[in-house]
Length: 309
Image (cartoon, rainbow, N blue to C red; front, side, top):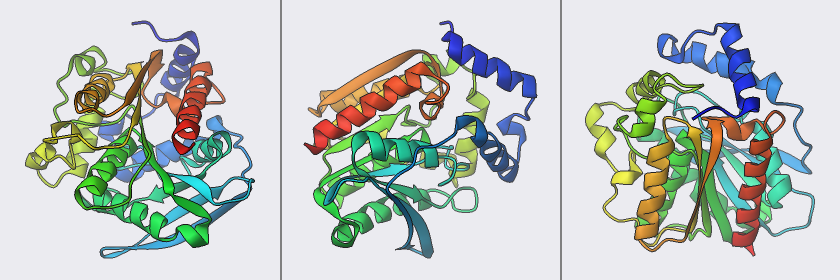
């Protein structure tokens, strides 16, 4: 499966930097390395309004950054969870894609700065994700949001948190969601699908890097069998909101994302699954560099506009 020529140029440029592999890094080093590559993704779009809010959670508070488009409210809303293996990534690393989503989908985007591992192990990020969702709906009036038109979404580990938040909303009688957008989501702890073996050495994301993320995230390997860690293992996916699932052909996570889409469909959930050929894990944020990232952004924005309508 050859890489798309634009994707290959990015992989070659990163290889030339001779960066320290994630699995040989400390969490602090890996976080800084992700932030250091931000400049290549900009410049970012302007949004009508951006505001940070402190949201109470068990044991403290987290920040939710709310991006509001120009048109008058009440707006539909997307609660967005950033990727980074639950260990790296933050509001700044995903600022550009959240701005683009707010503008292209014409909705409020609430980016959730959930607490990271290993300082905060599973299920802290899960509970933060759900707390942010319920806070947004409860605060709909002052945020000029329509609580009947709320979606969840995220990339990679954020895709995992998005669909787990949807599971929790179903099980806890929480907010009714109109859509979930799952961009190359983590859905299972096994690391043993064909795509994990095909793409064990990358590009961008390797099998050993994912093992490093899981090892930092979980307090014990047994937690990897729990549905809030591995939603693919949930007993039932019935009653979840319609889903757009995006996968990348050259990604270790490809098969588990597609398996989750199949399980949703088997449970009667409307699903659109799109595999982007020749793309690597993480391509979605690279809208300034990759034609297919711009296509994916348009697909996500279109799915959200349709769900919100």
